[in-house]
Image (cartoon, rainbow, N blue to C red):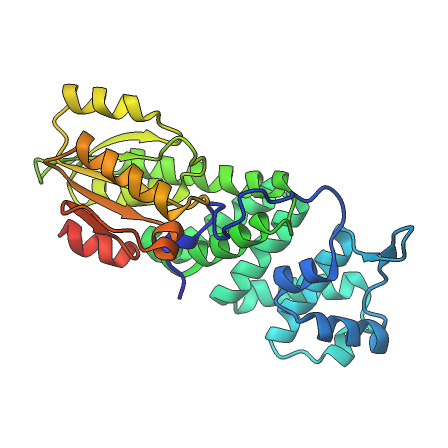
Length: 311
């Protein structure tokens, strides 16, 4: 199940020392990026000459951006009923035309994700923006995020963390969606009908804030006053905020790797800082570590659950 806890933010895996990709893709990278099994890719290479991998000095196969884009396009075609035996014989231009035809005639949510992946590999800013606008014209904002963007974030976040995409590709995607979210938050009328303030922040080791931004959007739309600090907030700053602002609720997320012991100690410190407020926590590390929670804490499994809490 896709949850907001597991999206784009790196931290899905326990190893904090991930070696980021510098050049080329392995066949495993192609598998996770395209959804086509390595065994199938090898068969297609052998039977249809689908890809022509490069080789290192030690005879290890690697693939470039063109190989990945070709496989992503073919993945989209096969998902839409085209036979690999037929597609494999097409020239690149014919493949692109068929993909474009699918995109224009009957784009599904899965097709949108595949198209976003291709544009991410190409780092096509104009194309990405146009596709974003196309999705947002077809779906309302929350529906688009629930049904399409979160699934894209899930894929991109996973691939970034295990090194299957380049950091620049991840930052490219993150920045575009971050801009859209901030713009939507700014356009949301500040109603404050709840007469309550929610503090949103990430601790010092958390850098990616897409999920936090979306949760803050939901809260603002539900009539809460938002006090947003964002990523990498020093703990000492939280006490200063609490002494100067009326804070009713606190929301934070844990996605980057953290031990259970360190997580539980941080929660104890957070309780001491905000002893009277209800504190919402979410993120993969909460799922993995299942920390003991102080009495005023509440785990948020996903965005649907948080909307229920908001009322």
